[in-house]
Length: 470
Image (tube, rainbow, N blue to C red; front, side, top):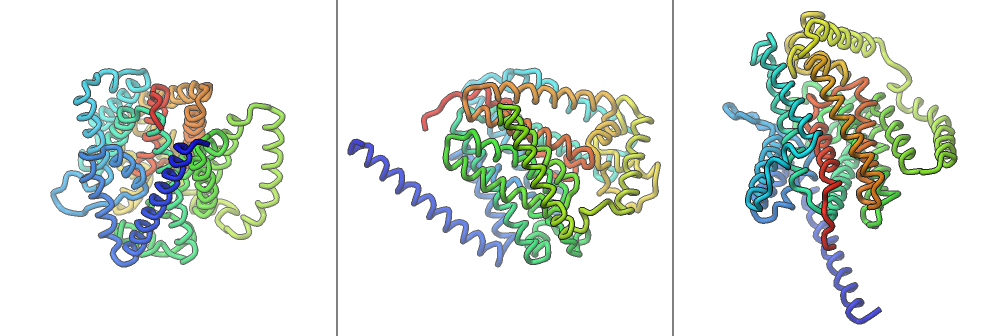
């Protein structure tokens, strides 16, 4: 090795050591802050990226990805948007718009440059149309919030697609996402060890104090619900598995391994039956895509099934909820699904309006008014049919099919980073569709919805990114 190469290596190690020390100091300060002044720390975490956006826009993007699990609300009268994360999503889109205008990049190619983008905009149009033609009052139990969330999701998708330009950005997004998810899992472990949701959780989400006042042994981490946490983790697990196998970057491989290990345990601690089933589906799909030989696939699945059979009795013994479906859950789900079918039959083309399922539920079954706002169909397919009708359902199905096709094209690429992105997107879609049989998380979990559309943004932009200097 030449002297220059040795000097460069020493400098690189010094920079890594400095970075590790900075991260350690910041982590220690943040941990202490969360103990003594949690709301102040959260405020600083959200304010600093906004202040840094004009100077280093990439840092603003990475900060948004890292802060995805946090979704604080400001309960001040007169504010049009109380969801701080949603406001940041709008700012992200505006920032990308300004940057592209400054560079003279065309608007048409960004917004309407592919079939999948056109179909996404068509779905938004159908959702908005279904909302405005609905017979439900415009202010009925905050149904308009579902439209606001959908718009923020789609704008986040376009922002990521318009921002991502090279492989370095893509790799860094995945690293930041893994680091954030590791923190989510660790906070979930903290809840499980202490046997409570923690003061920080209720400081972030005071409205949840009435819903989750009594600890039931199911972790939520920093998300709103046990099921949405499982769904959120299942969006990230396939990327971690793909990085373990395909990534050439050691940091990406190692962080993917840690993330998958901790996230899988966290999914189990949610005790979400649909989430755990989706996790098995995610592992099966990603392993099938990553292992080329059929004989090897069969061996892996056989060993996995054997391990599952050995561990299953231990899991059932420790988690009573997983031993079966209780009568209350069974009857409530049947009622929710029956109401969704009834709403669809009554409004087959455009449904009852995007976000209006909960309002029309009382036409079929009695429910206290104070509980209406928390209702959803607990089924992705039935909720789409009920709220957007056959038209909206088919448009959403086309969107999923187009993303599957784009991901498959990425898997066939020679670039390992693009291949692992394709595997991750297909795994995330598979997990969402499997879990969607028993849950609908786009309305109830802004964190899940934002992450889902960020991943779709990575999918559309990955095939067009240019190599960048390391």
